[in-house]
Image (cartoon, rainbow, N blue to C red; front, top):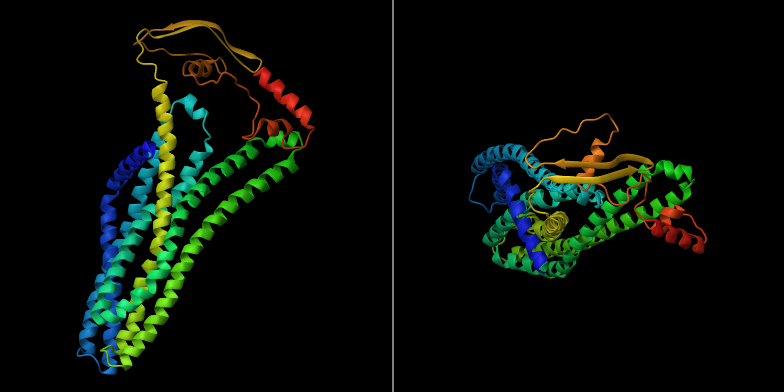
Length: 429
């Protein structure tokens, strides 16, 4: 539990730095979206007024409504121009900062730790995960502003028109939405599984492409097809489960929408003919205003669930980096005091002796140039000092799978023969 709290604290600091980088454009886009959302409510009021003027239930004139409509339209155009510039700039700055911070954390890893990791997770962070975070976390801020302002504005105008009709509309929408909230909690876990599955799928495809000569040499095309089909089906099934949960959330929202529209229309018509002060314009515009109430009710649970899933992806990345940093702290050897000493160092790659009984003293505070022809062992020397080589270094390609599948290349063989070969390889290593 302590680990979770620490990761959440790091995540908040990390996202705060990103927001600070794009704060100017976020504020501009947010203000523009606020104006655009208010304009939608003004349009509803103008529509109600025009209908009541036609039916003879309004004290305003067409000229007055026309002037108000023209002024608000000019404000709308100005706000939309600002939003058109500010939103892309905000997303540009946010994603630029996000990807750069991921890269900085990744590049700070030591060589030996990085080589032990599955690099496919970083490909997923830069592709699938980054796209989801942009849509479901950064861009959703503006969408939430739109939905919230529209909801509050429409609700206030509805209360001004008819508190009784407004109460009926809210009652009709509460129960279906309350039933959808438990489903929303499953969305984050589903998106996390899709992210993990995408990283594994990318790893499988990369292995097949890199091991293509091995596959062709051993005529393992049929087995590779079966392996790919199995992983592809598993990946698509995870995506199917995520979509299924999303559609379940939308189902309850749509049910609320239908119930609210029909209920408001019938109750509003009854109040209009019964003398409760509800004009025809109010009844018709109430249905439009209910869209601004219904839309947030339908979409906000899904948006919050996806936003929670995006936060999970960010924390997943931070957990990966944090574990590596803790390992680096545990393996820290302290400051050098006497330099680096090489005594009788030999390194062989394949059948070639690259370094042979090397002895040398690197004195602290001095600079050295390692000079030699191509293939003389310069990189090997540096990698050896930096612990860049694992104890067993082979040039043979290995699939990210079990020892058995690497021995058989996913083909069917006698079980005893496979076990004997596994034991022999383990003993040799």
